[in-house]
Amino acid sequence: MAKQYDFPPMLVYQMQYEDETGFNIEIRNGHPGLEKAEELFRKHSNIPDGEGWDGLVTYILETELPGSLDKFDLDYWGDTFIATCDRKADMTALATLLQSIITDEKRLEKLLMDLPESYRSSVAQ
Image (tube, rainbow, N blue to C red; front, side):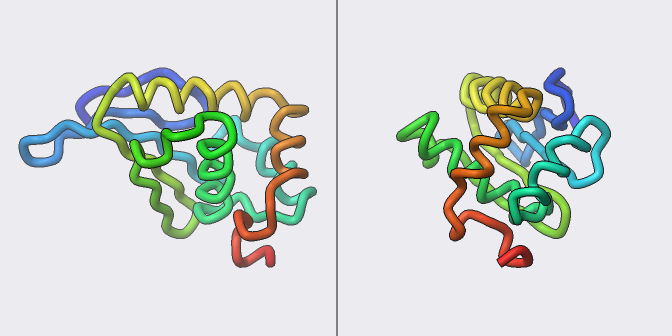
């Protein structure tokens, strides 16, 4: 990791890929600070695994930052979700938005209640 940025409870960092720099936002099930978010996921029939976070972040990008989905490469495996982008400004915008949602229980719960079934973890469906 070249540099870490302060966006708890997410891991946000800069990586060097060969000759290119990438910026990553990583959310892992069980990471300290995500306990309430994970509880809300389960309450609203979603699993806080990588796929569950991928669906929620996709939905957030589509509804709260329209037109920005193509700026990010979203991926997940197991309990980990990661969003990668080329520009620090894009990473900062998404990390700031996600941090404000994750730390605001009422806002997060509203998003999880409104989340269409197709955005939920397939384990939960």
